[in-house]
Image (cartoon, rainbow, N blue to C red; front, side, top):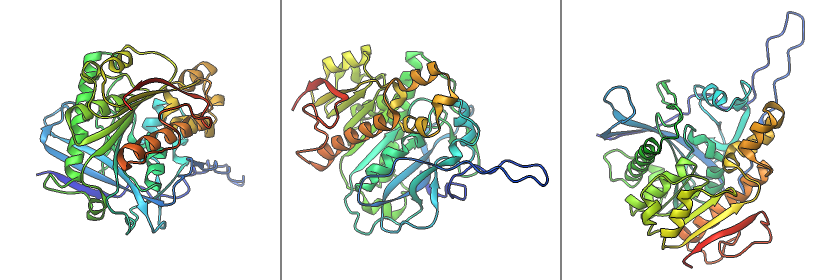
Length: 388
């Protein structure tokens, strides 16, 4: 039987400020560091979110040390008319130190991050037949690194489902278990396996969301979603998995890869669905091969000055946490290039939303434009076009 339960995020959410350091007797307490705000959503709706624990008993986890069903933690964002209660934390307590160590951030940095989503808020009563978009993070990253994208899409009436891919990225379960990420690798065969498993995860979660598995997500979320095609996007390996999900599951109808090398058969087969590559200004053989073989609608947008982490939350957090003062100049440039992080992240989010507005909502004109250079986004050039 498939298990799916909505769970609390596991902490009491507040401002996200780090606690004040202990002070000697008689000395004033050191002030807590100020909260760090993610970019505010741009849509007309307030945003709610829920964490859900799903178990797929039809698959053994290929990465677990013992035979066990595949378990996933999923975060769902959606429009709400009741923005009250507790703000959702950016990460669960068990993941904060794991992710801080991975990115060499000062301890307590991610506990200061403030989201704009209300934990366990009710779904907006007018949210019906909402388009669904899945998000997948980069290799070794938690799904939280796409929070700003998810919040913004939800504020425009989308239901966004972000999947933590257990063992691939760090995951904390409701019982307090923290499963760390597997070691990094450049082995194409291993990366292909991760991509395949991620695509299977996405299809399983879509089965649950659409009621094809025995146990469902919360009823109000189920009622709010559109039956039919879903969008899918991801950063890095999450973008590769998006392409594989499109190739293997026709229910995914449009996809975006944010600066990810494609590790799937889609490279040589192309896809039957529209696909957007949004990348830094470099060339990868997998992009070249994919663009050669893809015959459906396709675009490659190139963001001037960007590097690999210009395309998720770390771009804006790098500015707000002043990583240019914490990291070496070389490390900062390797992660973010010369593009200003908040602007790079905002531009990426605008193009992602325009893409899904067009292909999931049928909007014939979008801003920014997907077909021509847009004067409001001078840092973006169109590097490839297929279809119209």
